[in-house]
Amino acid sequence: MSRGREPEPVRAAGAVLLTGSGIRRSVAVVHRPAYNDWSLPKGKCAKGEAAALTAVREVEEETGAQIRLGAPLADVRYQVPKGPKVVHYWVGTALRINNRAPDDEVDQVEWLPVFQARERLTYLDEQAVLDEALALPETTPFLITRHAKATARKHWDGEDRNRPLDPAGRKQARQVARLYQAYGVQQLRSSPSTRCLQTLAPYAETARIKVKPVPLLSEEAGAEHLAGVERHIRKLAVGAGRTTTPTAVCGHRPVLPAMLAGVEAPNEPMPPGTSLVVHVDDDGLIAAREWHPAEA
Image (cartoon, rainbow, N blue to C red; front, side):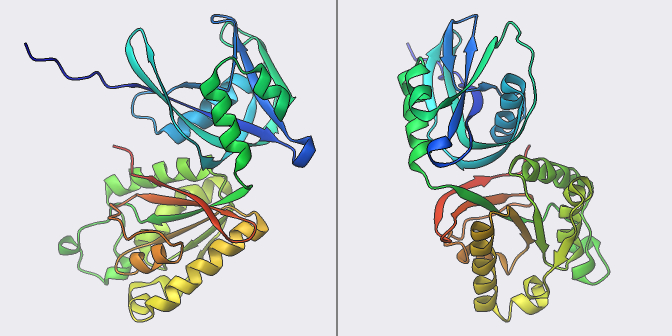
């Protein structure tokens, strides 16, 4: 008798939510009355929701804190009555903490010194996630995004640099905006090509940030100066880390491989709307990388 396929895991996401620095660093832990446990804030992914967005949403729902995601942490996997479950974790930095009324899901939120938080956590696997987060240097996210889906070249009679996004691409651009919000992007750079500028436009409008076009990242200039592109991206990434300014850059082929090389990333295929997030410390060193494909 053949065995059936393993069920898809229940997906959830959360964060090690930190505030302060040094000996004044605190961690948020929550008490769940239904389980009578103390845990890191987390919750289930909505259908079609990217885990990073779940982490931001669930942390705010359970603690009242609006956060910026930092480096990704190890997943936690375990069994629940419905089958396997996987929880994706990130380091989270509290940007603003609002009051939250107790409810049946979370009735207590405590900000504890790190050693007390570790002792308070009920589960060993969450203690290990906390240990991992505390071992990492403080970092700043730097994002490289391939433009969202553009009108096909064969359907465009104008200059390629003026080729716009198609309807699917405009939807992807809104998805990119949500991802940028999760990482607290404060600075935007882009190829001057229309498809790149339009990819950043929804976030730029929402966050009230101006997009700075970089002529070197254009197809016309960049393809002839790939080494210069690589150096420029490296300079931007190092600057983001040293000034703690989350930064995003949008580009396109054939310049993308040089952009990836600027953050020591492999030349992986990047379908339209895909983002690479690298986490840079204040010495300009890369502590972690993660890929975010466009949502389905």
